[in-house]
Image (tube, rainbow, N blue to C red; front, side):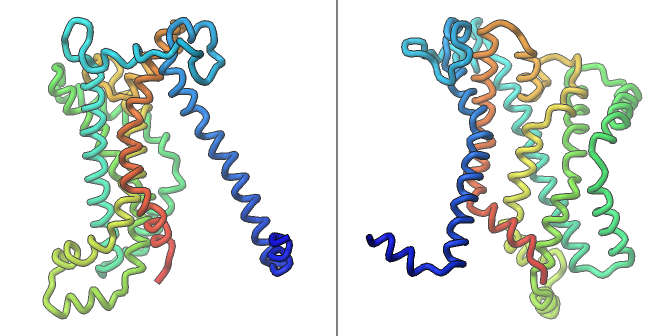
Length: 309
């Protein structure tokens, strides 16, 4: 009775808005379930015994009595008491991803500041070239990049683990810090900063370095966190580049994604599936941690980059 009275009080536009919200919620919930289902299956499979993997591969979760953590044992110390490859893979991925994130944010801040707050010829041409470059698929640089890498490797005479490790991760990190999309995000945010703030700081004798460090960077925290999230996920999940550069270089030099691809590789052994799922779930932890710390600022940062002054 009370619900009927409330419904009568709503106008036609309000009822339409409510229906649209309900439909949107249902559609988003279905889409979320579709995306989350593989992750749920991964978690369940990682706890299945080898027998359960063989007898009931279609089940999402292990059957009663077939739960096991066997696939998670030996991640850090192998059966011989030696350091396993998992810590090496995680370390390789973590430090290279962290370096990529740091350099990406720094370059995006500097480029956006120079374009928005400094006067120089060719600024418009530079921005138009960035927008045009966004239309070019990144895959076109794969073949020339790999050919150049092999040329440099041969010219430098790289033939030991340390020099190979340094060259591979230099080649893997540097190209990942020049994403045009992130520059555009930071550029759009800087356009929302009132120019009066910058001019006032200049009139007080502040240098560009001080303005950049004390005024602009603190204001850009939300956008910086968005770029960190995007860059971390892209660098951590990168597979094609590391696979090409690390081919034939041994397991100690690999990232976690390359190790995952090679550890499973379509093997028909049921135990290999369980270990692969457990490793994949373990490798997901850093991305989840970054998302938890940046999710509150993500919407705010994306919204602020879409507002024009």
